[in-house]
Length: 497
Image (cartoon, rainbow, N blue to C red):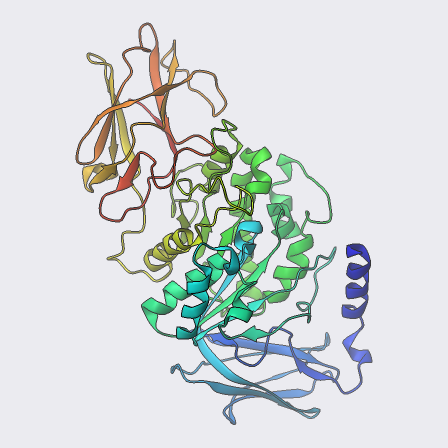
């Protein structure tokens, strides 16, 4: 059935607009109650017309703000300066074929929420869903759009018209909307008190290749290819490409579980996808979306209890371009929510789908404040090591966090391993058998100590790593947290000197 639906959709969408006599419309993205991006570089609006070279006038509340002409591809697109207030407006497009309107339009920040099933996980499934539905009425300035699922072997001009409406908050409209996306927008709305637009475009069980353009896939071709209807740009073509003309603030992303079996590839794939999306959004939106727009992601949550499979921890590392934290020298204007300490082994939706989306969304929100909104007083990162040294007289490895400047909180002595080898020039890869579990013996203001005396006789400790497990700890009980911000230190591997 899916194949038949797909073929029908493509046939409908691929009818040349020139064959539709006297047709003039907004893109399917534009509807009543929507939020348009408020931007100093302008805001785009676009649509289609059967009349090439026709002049289109854009009005806000009956006042002209821009004009453009219909291209040879039957597309009209304009950018205009957005209103500075939070009030609702009517946006109109006027041509020789008629006048079209969208009403109750707000101007604020628009965030795209994408990925696989944990981004798709709806608000109905969170632990306090009833309270969230009741509370949603307090946020009338949050508006949201759910892009209908479809895939395509070639780029589509517009999103699917099925269910392409912007909603205001209610139990009915939110029940099937992304929990992480909504909660993230809610926290932003509480903080800024201006309109927030949320665009959900995701599909459970999908790989990053599906969401990457052919250009991005090609740049990581050395890592090999996997072909099926959900990979090799099929979802990018149908669920990202049609959004590129729209002005956005940024993206949040929750995906990676389906790529864990080949986690080492992800460092290239993820970075290339981010950079490619940025370039293409900027170009297609007439420069109104930043070419370095903020990109937030969720570092993979736990899955199976007690499982030693190393695909998940390796993918968490790859998500940071093998650095361990973001932003970093490769991943500019990127923020993340560490989620490895949020297991839900008894989730009725499967233990790969933890219900703790409030924590995930709040950690993303903190990252957005620090990175996307440049709020310097926000401590949005957990502790990360800045040195690891061994005292050979005592065989104690000391790991210091954040140059000793910020206090840590220790909740467990577990989760640490050292690479113990017979040469100082030998190092362990992620799957090496020379990794040995060690226990934290003490800690201070901003450092922890590991006793390696039982393992170092005739050997050399060359590396230390932390939380390198699929599910490294019980709920919020990993070893090291920031004392002031309650955020977990992310997994790491670090050389010992």
